[in-house]
Length: 429
Image (cartoon, rainbow, N blue to C red; front, side, top):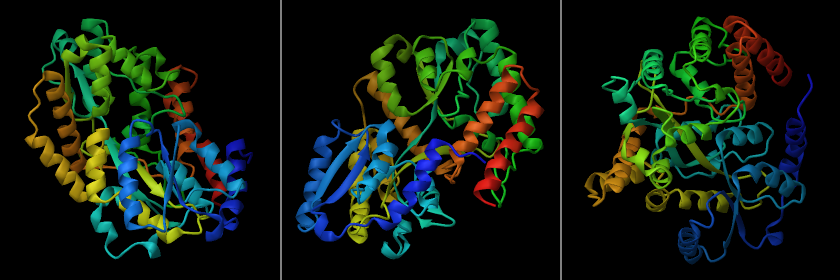
């Protein structure tokens, strides 16, 4: 089985992560790396880390913020230079891959008793790996809502937008036939949004079995593949879903060519700025789900690389950044959701009492409150297992082939299962 360049890098870095630890004397301060938070949150981190410094004078923190697309490359380079950070902000798939190669510290013995009780159970569990242990601490969260163009659905004679996937075909057809626009956009670009894979889970598809083999080659999986293949072949999805990422959905929504966009409440402000006329017709609604009503939540985490020589202090810093007070403040400024139980309660209470003076601010308040309420029925639908991005790539690529008529839907699903099983058997014999 041939491995990709990225997998070869990941494999070779494992030894470095596990073996190249620094002595405390080589490191004057704790190194904290975050993703895409500067310069907007410079004041926040200056204040929060200033408080940390007062409480921990011997554990100064040096904060480095990285662009989204460079963290993996930068982290690998830091490992080879023996300068890996002590705390790093990771998304769950990359964290799982690092952990599978011994690259992250199991935090279990470093955490205080009952630490798990401080966080939402569903996202705490999402930071635990069956083999590597507790590989991270949850930080901030986002959930998708359905942003709906009220004018378009009224033109189509639709009273309420769909709430579940089974209502989508009729909704998309009526929007297309009566307005000439599209009902929704969901990308099949392999390295983009996981929303489509999450929809499979909501439709009752089990992705992998206990041996990490393809469980999606099943009646539910075949039905899900046909669902999306038929929508595309019938012209009910924009042609670009096979070539452009989820960012295209926002562009189409802002131009008035899309009736419903699945995105977070934080994007409402950009729609208000870029397309005020569309924003005025936009309503936030609950996200699309399956029969059981479970929504997806996206998690950003803080992890401690195995290379850190100050693991306990690193864990203490991660716990400090994710405590209720700091999460409440960050959630308010970033317009995201906290993973802390107490912080979420504080954010919901604040939103319920808030009385904005303008309609744009009232619109954002409604969306943020709906997001917070959605968390009660949300979990991480696609587990952050090692290789999960490879699974997404395989499934999306074969689904594209079915959409474009290169294979039947059932044949494409079978090919996806065959390709994944070859990969899985090579990685987990």
